Length: 168
Image 1 (tube, rainbow, N blue to C red):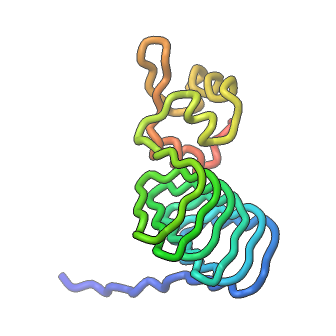
Image 2 (image 1 turned 180 degrees about the horizontal axis):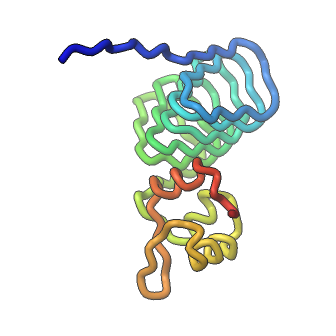
Image 3 (image 1 turned 135 degrees about the vertical axis):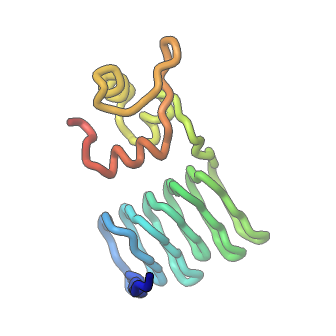
């Protein structure tokens, strides 16, 4: 049986200018920032902060590669890679972390675990603990109850959040 394989076009976005604001991508893209960026950035797919970039932002993404300067909070749901010329100041929350010799990390690192407690999930989602417990107890949020404590699988929660069911 023969079938055609279509080559998928990569969505690539190169940002070479100074920008301020909030950027959010719902579909996976390959985003590379080469200039200055300030604000909040939420990506799916690959985000590269080039060696020439200066970023002051809270960043949430799947696969994040840093070669320039970043100040802020970074949540990397799949992997965070700090290349030799990377300078990162702030809090990082990677699922997996790769730090090359020469990279500088000034701040706090807390690895994302496959399972999180209710407190960890509240911090991860940036919502109050009471909302997490209310959603879990009412069955609106996927979780596992062990005795009196809840455990939440990060990948399941990420899928739940992406589905738009938060708070419903």
